[in-house]
Image (cartoon, rainbow, N blue to C red; front, side, top):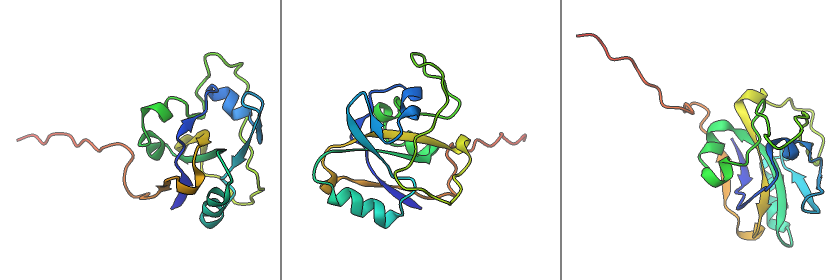
Length: 144
C-alpha cells in the first residue's frame, strides 16, 4: 500500500508530453517532483513541508486512477496510448530520487501528474487493496 497526495490541478499537457517531463516542465516553468522513488513517510513529509503549491508525478494502479474522477482521468498517461497532438515519442517521467526497486509492469499502472495547490492540507490517497479486482467480475448465468 502506498499513499500519494491527491492532485487538485491536473496537468494541461497531453499524455506524450507528460512522459517527456524529466523534473522540470517547460510549459509551466515549474519543477515537477517525482514521488515514485520515495517511501510513504518521505512523500508525506515532502508534501507537508512544501511552502506553497507544488507539481508532482507518480504512478498508481489503473483502478485507483480511475477512481479519482473524470477530470483527472482525462489527463493521465497510460502506457501504450498515443497523444493525438503529441509527436509519439516514447519517454518516461524520471523520479527525483534514484530507486533500485523494480517498478511494476507498465500495463497495470498509469502516470498521474499535476498540481497540489495546498500541500499542508492535501488529502492523501492510498493505492491499496490489491486483492480487490479493478473491474467487477461478471459471472455467467447458470443454466436451470
